Amino acid sequence: MTGKFIVLEGPDGSGKSTQIQMLADFFKSKNIQFVLTKNPTNGGIGTILREYYLKNNTHHLADALLFAADRAEQVETIIKPSLGQGKLVISDRYYHSNLVYQSAQGLNFNWLKQINKNFPKPDLTIVLDIDPAAALKRIDSERTQKEKFETLEFLKKIQKKYLQLPKKLKENIIVLDGNRTKEEVHANVFREVNKLINP
Image 1: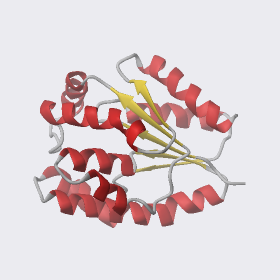
Image 2: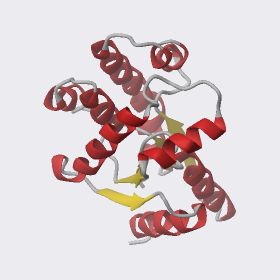
Image 3: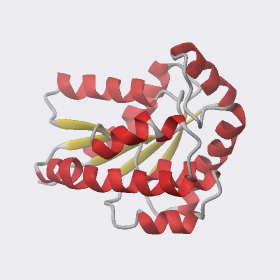
């Protein structure tokens, strides 16, 4: 049996981590086997990204290539083996973030698609759409140091890019309202996930 691959996307402050934890709690209660992963990962390349590149205004091309390299390792060591074992794989971000964030920085969208084209497509991608000002308020309340992408102007750019994804990619991408309470958002997230795992 082949597992299912689910991705949650959206800007920082959209509630992805909260929704992933709520899904994980549900799967645990039902004894459903699942694996959680994220971009950037906890691997060597992902650590470089988190500890240096996400905190500094480096070359955007370097960002894009490092994210793709980190993802290549993630696919081979986590995603493919887990799916082959019939597990659900839930990823906090995937190549969609690469397409959105780096194209918002001026890189060519089609080139970004090209460097990510060999990675497996998710069975379901959920984008949590949130008002950029509300996202920034959440970010400010949760931590003292921001990453380089966490400004109101940039969050407005990536919101537009995320909303364009369903038209630009031939994938199962669902956009959900992330401005609601976490319980309301979870009900909508779970509805879409349930459609996938219990068709």
